[in-house]
Length: 70
Image 1 (cartoon, helix red, strand yellow):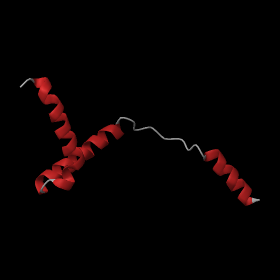
Image 2 (image 1 turned 120 degrees about the horizontal axis):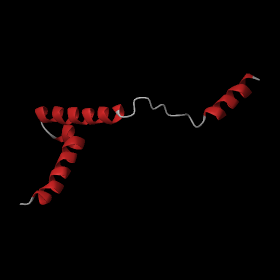
Image 3 (image 1 turned 45 degrees about the vertical axis):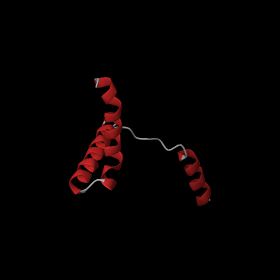
């Protein structure tokens, strides 16, 4: 088989292993799936370490607090 023909099924199998492996597979493989998913998560979170999301309701919350104090 050609490499291009194998690439699609391998990608799908890897995606299934990462997403569902810890629920379906036996003991040694479920840990590997969980660790892989955790590593991928930490990698993507690590790309944006200084990102602090803003609170879109901050102004409204401040106004409500001021009204409650009156």
